[in-house]
Image (cartoon, rainbow, N blue to C red; front, top):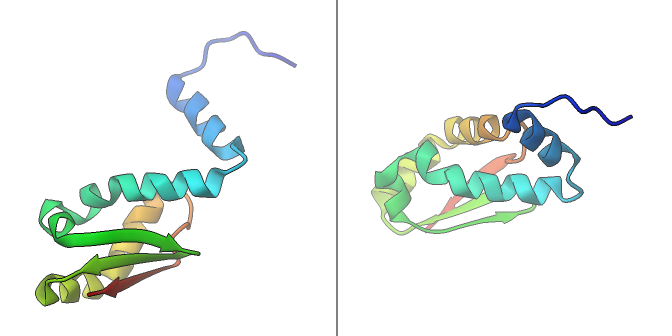
Length: 97
């Protein structure tokens, strides 16, 4: 039954995302868009590639120092990214040169 009561826009967007047929792809896109917020601008500038392969997020960083830093913090970064989208989308972060 249709409800005519006004609802906050945030609630409507959340309902849309949860019921969207390609929800996982949408949330992957959301993760890619918040990457720089989560890792910070210094690390984000060093990333030369960011893509999904299944549930794995592949991060390309040429600088060995930054690559090591992201590798060491990968679980923390993964948890923050998943919190941003309220779902465990990223199961693993793989850092490559």
